[in-house]
Image (cartoon, rainbow, N blue to C red; front, top):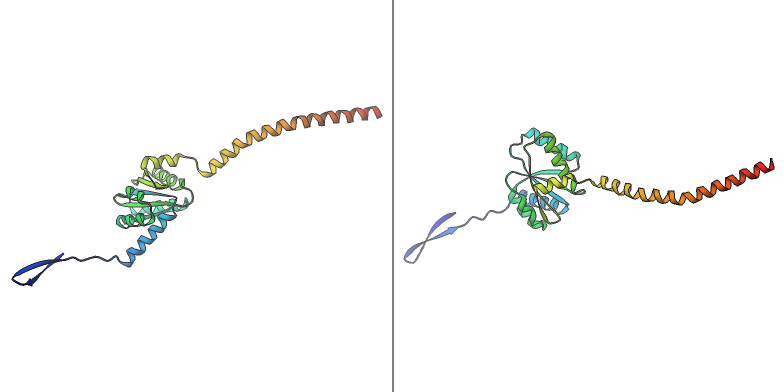
Amino acid sequence: MQQLPRVFGTGFYFWNVVEVSVPTQAKVEAVELLKDKFERSSIVITTNYSGLPVSEMTELRRALREAEVEYRIIKNSLAYIAADEAGKPAIKDVINGPTGVAFGYEDPLAPAKALSNYIRTTRSALAIVGGEMDGKTLTSDQVNQLATLPGREELVAQVLMRMNGPVSSLVNVLNGPIAGLARVLQGHVDSLQQQEA
């Protein structure tokens, strides 16, 4: 801020000149990109990556990419703006310090499972700060609990197994009288063949 002296009448008056910073095109594009990712994602998990060497960060990104999870390092001030524009202000509650964000688009459990698995297997310094899902803020403990839930494929398999039991029982119950009738008819055919012989 710069003060410029102005002479008016009998005295000096100082007016403050305020410089307004205009966002650069790159920042505007970064906010738009983050806004789009926030809008499309079913879950957003934030991490603190301080103390993580570059080689480990590269390994983390590879592991998350294999799990179909996108991971980006973000600038907090731009993320605050993008979260407001995307209509997900809960994200702002879990952005703190050096922030990396895992975006889950299809399966909301995939980012939680991938991050928890990576941290557990590599004993990484990466820390889960929290997350946002369905407009609600998640703590790091809640994100870790999400990671322990069975995935979609496992749930479908469990439902099919439970449905298979009653269906098999019904088939056996319905098959019993038919099998009995078939045995009686076969016995009658056998007795007729013996009488003819």
